[in-house]
Picture 1 (cartoon, rainbow, N blue to C red):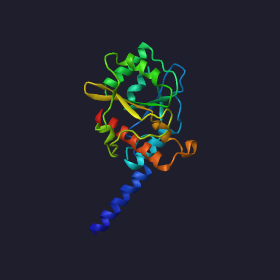
Picture 2: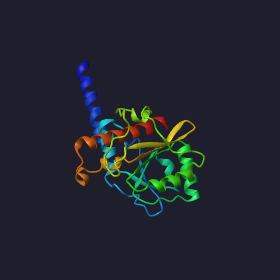
Picture 3: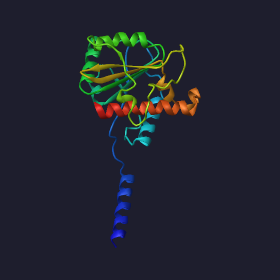
Picture 4: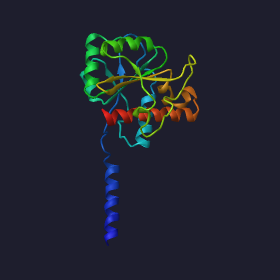
Length: 221
């Protein structure tokens, strides 16, 4: 009788969670910025990364990415913001101040250079943290060693100038608040397979590194 009751209880719990799924624990967003750069690039990237993380790590992230502007108060609703593009980036003084407040209050920004934004985003980050420099993040940093181990740093998804992928960051009061992936094209590796036809192993490494970044943002900030 005891085992029968336990089985019935477990069945009830399963049916309850199936009929009434839990609300998302996290929502993440893509950053909309001014300057003419294609902030909207890689349309399938974040949804695919979210799906991968929900399945592999049960993060319970809302399935669709959201869009948030740099100067918006809504920025503070998201523990993780993703920024990408190929071109120009411009932050107004008010936007830079808003982004600084977000990052120093526990938010996390991942910037992925989609090839072409490097010289622009570096200048704009100086508006946000004029007293700090982008520094290369050592391979021993926890962001490379969450669930997945990347002992040699970032995976290389696409070749452009034959350079090695580099991971830079802004460290504020000892905490990594912004992680910048350069010469890597990490977000391209999250895209639907038919877009670039990258090998499965390349896409998997990109998704695993993305999962590490999300895990770090969710658990350390």
